[in-house]
Length: 112
Length: 115
Image (cartoon, rainbow over all chains, first blue to last red; front, side):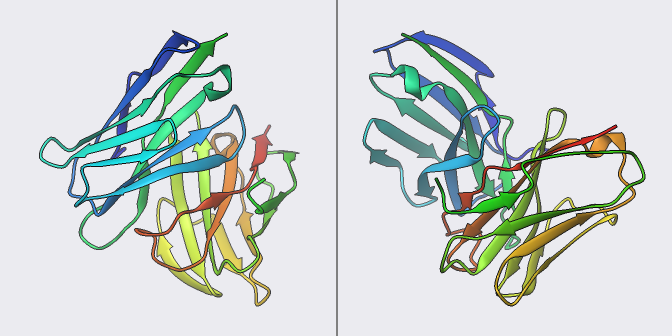
């Protein structure tokens, strides 16, 4: 079963709007990573947030982590058509195995 | 361009056959990871090699095997192929062996279609 589960499954917005995607997971983690995947292509690493961090920024991206709720959110501000992609969260299973586990992703469409 | 290369880009074969997927990591990266992405299973971690040695196994079938060679390129062998093996297979690489801490750089993938 998936460790990280993204919500919503799909999101359609207009250029300039903000996009928020959420990720929930089940077990304790050491870190959580967000990736972007353009249609049929490889994943691109966006940001890593460690379990002792609460918020991280990278350009127009803001990631938060709430370990008490076992959830993370990815906010893309001032979205652009080029942000159209699927976004995945990936966690490492706790207990030392550190197996990368991906959710099913949020499909984001940004309309120009 | 991540610097990770995969060949071939597309592969069409029949059930029962065997195929080999190839991956060259980024220059300087010692770890190679293999993933399978399908519509029903999503993105699944298969296996990791670090400097030629197996480091972690995920949901890899016994019909699948992999190895990493002294020049650090890796091959994923898929045998006795079934229709359900049709998927995108990604290779990723990272500098070190710590799966929890490393940023992985993904290749463009090999799209396998089993008919």
